[in-house]
View 1 (cartoon, one colour):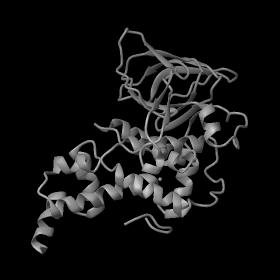
View 2 (cartoon, rainbow, N blue to C red; view 1 turned 90 degrees about the vertical axis):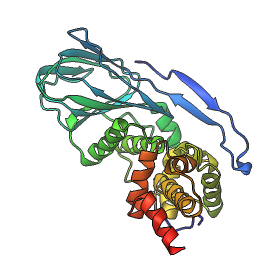
View 3 (cartoon, rainbow, N blue to C red; view 1 turned 30 degrees about the vertical axis):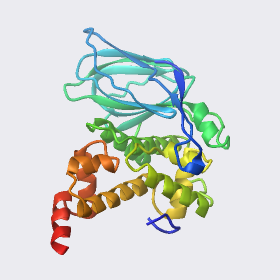
Amino acid sequence: MGLHRGSLLMGSIAATNTIQSTNASNRKKQSVEIVQVPADLSLAFATGAVVPRSLHQWRGFSAEHVVTGTQPYSFQRSGETQYLALHDMILDDGEIAIDGMATNYTRDWRRSVSFIPKGRSAQGWVTPASRKNAFTALYFEPALISEELERRYTVTNPAPFLFVRPPPLQAALTRLETLLLAPNVDEMLAESVCLVAALEVFGIQSDPVGVGLSERHLKLVDAFVADHLADGISVSDLAVLCGLSRFHFTRAFKTATGTTPYAYVTTKRIDRARELLAESGLGIEHISGRVGFPTSAQFRRAFRARVGCSALEYRRLRRRIR
């Protein structure tokens, strides 16, 4: 079933790579510029301990979830990217200073959000309380945001803020935290969540959405997803088909279809899996790979959430009906 309107979203830029592909008329992946944004936050523990840090990257975004534990440490950021963080920490003592702002001595950082724009360095130290302490940080490149928003929002960066609890940003960053903690990160969903968080920071979620995608663009997306169902499909892949930025594509897609790109692609994957379960003898592991899920566990969860039963139960039911 195709797409129809109303039917079923430490440093500067380190490198730019290009994924080579063929013409969109053949429904192949077009060239997508991958802009990598490393973390610009350094941590130094008093005991000399080293905390594991794993940075996940998408076009123009990087994110990490860091468990800091209870060891005292100092921190510093250079101010070369936009920095957005969700904290889950309580301090026995500590302070943070941002250029141009008074030193902050807040100790309860639980589920609070902080934003430090590019060009503002920050430094401080903390003595964490005896509990599990962690934070999720999102780094992004402001030039990319301005470019993707077609320069309509190239006003001065939003002012920095510390330890606030705005529900939309809490929700977006909590979702990102959950994704980063998963054994296998859902790349398309993570990219979508990063976009939502950036939009919230710039205060443009309420901007008029405008018109949706044309029927021609919807058909291009539909065909591309069908052809690349087993591949890792990103929002960038779909946006470039339509000649739009990821921001505008995501919103135009939802206006035209009533759903997000991520939900649409996942539905198509599950629909194909249902066909394979009913018509083939392929195992669950094989089917999950054929429809683009990185692990069978991820496939099983998604299948049950959308179908209401396990993949094996569905196969048994279909075979009884036949």
